[in-house]
Image (tube, rainbow, N blue to C red; front, side, top):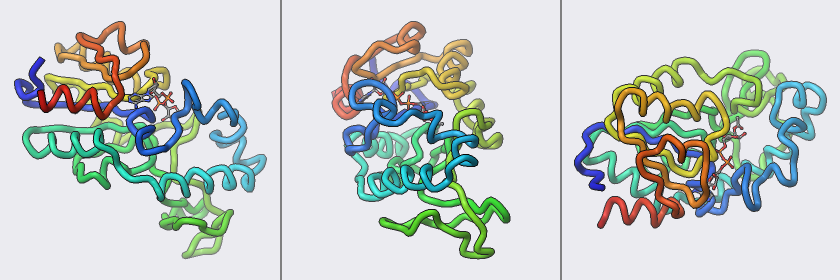
Length: 230
Ligand code: OAD
């Protein structure tokens, strides 16, 4: 398969593309949720019940993410974007695609780098070892992480752009996602239903494997490298 024979590429990425940057994924071996139950931490209800606990957990994650560096897979996608139309819809909140140089990135689940004021919606950039729970720099009210939690809607404008990208692409690449969290997971089905070639890169079998035209059972860096450079 020659990736350069496609003109319009839409890429769905998940936590697996960042494990080589030492950020733990959610599910699978060493997944984050093995130690922390998501319903205790990543829901509006959990935050309402115990904002300090949720902020404490996010502070740990934010420190990990801010110290992490993009890996080869992030850089390969950024390079590919220089040669053709390419949109990345990422479920990741770590901004490693942007830091690798990708320009056309849709953050389906927000990003972890900012707090959002519960009163005035102001976004404040968070630094390593920030004091938590952080207060809004504008109005001193309480804030929350600027991410999408279980049970919350995706940012509609961003998701609409992702739908367009997957509807119009001729190649949909699905990299490092377990493909179980909706509505992001359905983007691959959408591309397939519109006639796109669906390519998955994941060391494990996922629900996406059933619809993929090709599943590459490899980690993101070497899977992409072989695909692009061979
Ligand atoms: P998951 O943790 O569910 O899945 C990670 C996937 O990456 C698994 O299928 C692994 O097999 C695969 N994987 C692991 N290492 C890899 C590597 N080096 N290269 C390629 N693949 C690798 O992560 P997501 O699918 O991103 O949502 O999870 C989706 C959403 O669930 C997250 O965005 C988050 C979570 O709840 C919210 O927080 C709203």
